[in-house]
Length: 198
Image (cartoon, rainbow, N blue to C red; front, top):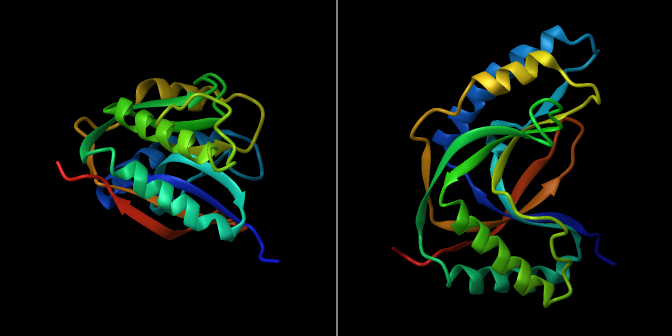
């Protein structure tokens, strides 16, 4: 019996966006020295791993990859290439108790939501669990390692901003495998399909 693989469907980010968001992470990291923990408060996403998840698949049987790839192709044929803008900075559940710090999509978020909804709908027809929460397109910058709020981090979240005019042309959707490692996940591209041309 083949082992399962941990996978998700995503929009990959270009290197320019990754570099800009890495600079933003560096500014947010300055809150960590004020915290008296042995490890940093946040586990920050590696810049090369920054992406927008459209559909988290979890642990799947490799035999189901063909179905997932076919579904991605069908979905991609329904959507044209578009430009998305990245401009918001926030946290789940909120900036006063940040468990996940994110950069949000401020332009064409509705396009991403439509793609995610179509993937969810089509894959649920193949007995892949639908999402159990609403879709908010975002890029996870870091996840909290500790339960207590941090005033310094909240202040930074309220006072620094994503650089103006940050945008990217979205041309593809990708299937990625996540390999969990001690220093954080490593992502491997399994499949990628192009959206319709503009």
